[in-house]
Length: 202
Picture 1 (cartoon, rainbow, N blue to C red):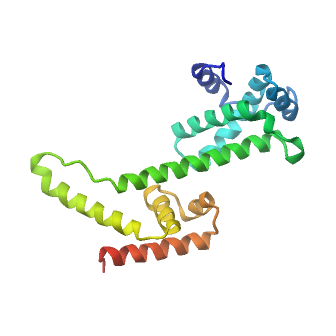
Picture 2 (tube, rainbow, N blue to C red; picture 1 turned 180 degrees about the horizontal axis):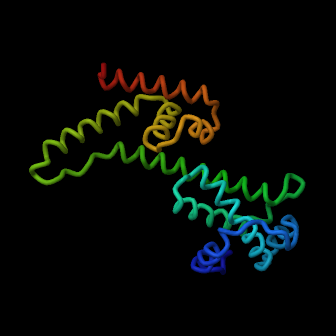
Picture 3 (cartoon, helix red, strand yellow; picture 1 turned 120 degrees about the horizontal axis):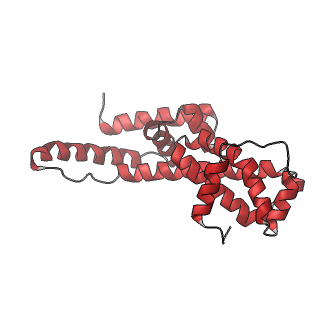
């Protein structure tokens, strides 16, 4: 909400992220319609009931607790700002909110993967004098890896970055990229073969 401070949102998150849906209160669909006309009390109830489920969805994708909490807050703010887009004919309020949560989580993972890829392409700073030789050798290795990564297809590079630098399993990579598990395995296998040939590893 535009007039609710970040500090207030953080405090609200801390209180409510451990809570569940609860038995009382209005139906979420009705609450969300009230949120759409700027009803902060209704938003507090939506927040109370969906903060924990949204965090759970995000945590399964993002995995890092701090980043998951940050994404969850972004999701609930998006709910406040875009509640007018909710259409009960297309699904429940909970489904709508959790779909936003899942999309935001995937966006965050892809953003982190892209940042990791950029870091791999950035030469390391030179260390103290007695470590110069090691640093130069390491930088050359990183430069070779960068060039070899550039030689892959976008799909291969993204899959390998998530699996080997992001620490995700093949099944998790498939889910994040919306691809079949067999397809992801093939991309990674073919990409690693090309990397091996490029690096001259026997």
